[in-house]
Length: 246
Image (cartoon, rainbow, N blue to C red; front, side):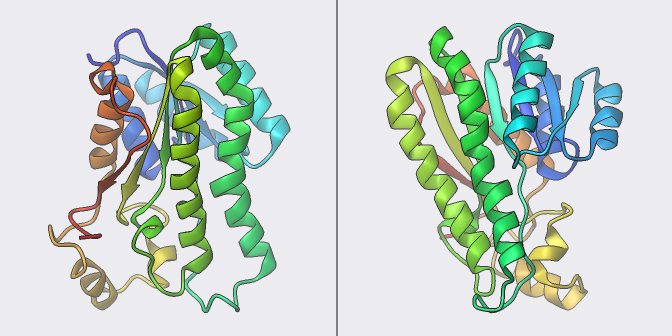
């Protein structure tokens, strides 16, 4: 029960890596708000786990403000914020990506971190404690071709993590990131362009441990970094990738 007494928000928490983090946090004793653009999926998982649910568009200021207000009303305090919500564009030449796809990646992967900070960091600063975890990607440090603007958004997230960490450390707030390799999530087909046994085999050949990341892998790493066991760790981007970036 490493998170006993802790409260947490997990964005994009209704599926994929986010759901893995939610399940681990609940198992370790945290009270969790599952924040997702898919309100029905968030409600279903919340009902299963005894958690809270909130429909949110993390790219919209008003929606994130509503999320912050709902969490503080439900819990009275917030100890942990996990910025997990993310999207990608389909693989394509960098100059062929549409402006609409670029804007969506920017809004969901980058602007969302600014918005959650804007509405929740003041609470953590006032309490002089808190842990923020940004779910970035191996794409931040070992970019794949034809995913250029997605890669760039995750590189931004790592730099934002380090900048937030150094600014907030004197105020008792830790900020870290995890860098997963692709996993069995709704984004896998987006990364690969199409899902065939041949493409999967080619993708897996780049991962020394020979398997995709799982939601459980992300939950375990997130739990450690957001727990008091990691009280001396801030500003890191932990690779949870089976050796992909070596």
